[in-house]
Length: 465
Figure (cartoon, rainbow, N blue to C red):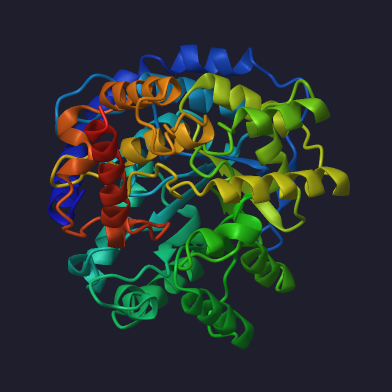
C-alpha cells in the first residue's frame, strides 16, 4: 500500500468504524460467554517488564496475518467476527500482548484489533503498535503525529502500552539505513515528540523494531548507554536458523546471537518476531521432522521453534501471527507453561539449523511488505512454492538426461504444481526489475534477481519437454 492509498484508506476507515462497532457489540455477550467457558488448564508463562512491572504473556499475538473474508478490491478484507473469536480465546488462555501496525493487513489491522480488544477491560491486555512513517511524504512531523493519533482512534484507547519505531535500519532510494532513520525520526523532531508523549503518559514503553543496517542498531544502543534516549524494549528477529546463519543467508541481515547479546548486556527486554521465520520452521523437510519426532513424538516443528524463541532469559514475549484457532491452541499449550530447552535440545536444533542453511532457500518470511506488486506478481507465493519444492526435494534433476523417467515425472509435477499454486499472470516471468519491492523487504532480498533465477529455471524445465 503506498502513502496515497494509505491516507485514503484511513479516512474511510474512520468513517466506518462506528458502523463496525455497532455490528460487533451485538456479539459481545456471546464473546464474553465464550471467553468465560474456555479457561486454560495451566497458567501461561509470563515475563516481567522491569520498566513497568507489567506481567506480559510469553506468547504475544501478532496481528499481521488476520483471517479474511470474501471482498472486492479496496474493501476491508478482515473477517471481524473471526478476529473477535481468536482474540477472545487468546485472552481466556493467558495471552495479553497484541502487536499491530498502521500498515498491517492493507491498513486495517489496527481497526480490527481495536474492535476486538475494546470488548474487554482495558487493563486485561497490552497494545503494541508502531510509528510506520516509511514514506518520505510522511516524515514531516505533522504527518507522523497524524499517524499516531489515528492509531489511538482505531485502537479505541487513549494510550499505547508499547510503541515502536517501526523497522529501523532499512535504507532505500539511495539512502543508508542511518540516513533514512534520521529523516524519519531525528531531523523532523518525531523521536523527541514521542519521548514527550511517553512523559505525559500517552505511551508507556518506547522501543524500536530492527531490520537491516547494523550501524543503526548499534547507534541506538549507544544512545541508550549515553543516556540520550532510553529504550524500554527492542523487537528483533530470533529463531534457531537466524541465530548463527542470518548473515550467511543474506549479508545485509544480522545474526540473532549478536542482537540478543547486545540487548542482554543492557538488560533491555527483547520482543521476538519471526520465531517460525514466516512459517518455514513449521514446514520442515521430512528428514528433519523425523529427527524431531525421535526426540518427542508429540511435539510439532512449530512447538520446537517456539520453545527455542521463548527460552532466553531476556525475552519478554514471542510474537506469533495466528490466523486460525488451531495455531492459538497449539501455541498456548507450548507456553502454558514453557518448558525451556535443555543444552542437549539446543545443540540438536543448532545442528538442524546447519542442515537447513545448506538447503539455501530464498529467505522470504511471507510478510507481504513487498505487496502489492505493480505488475501483479504474487511475490510471496512464488518464493513459497520454490522453497517448499526445495524442502520436499522435488526439484527435477536430470544430469543432462532429459529422457530419464524420474526427471520427466518430477518436471511434470513441478510445472503443474507451479501453475496450480500461482496463476500465470502472477508468476515470476512478469517481473520487469522495477526494484520497487527491494526497499520494502525486511529480509533485504534482491527480489528481482531471485525472480529472474526462478523464471530461468522454469524456462529450462519447459524447454526440456
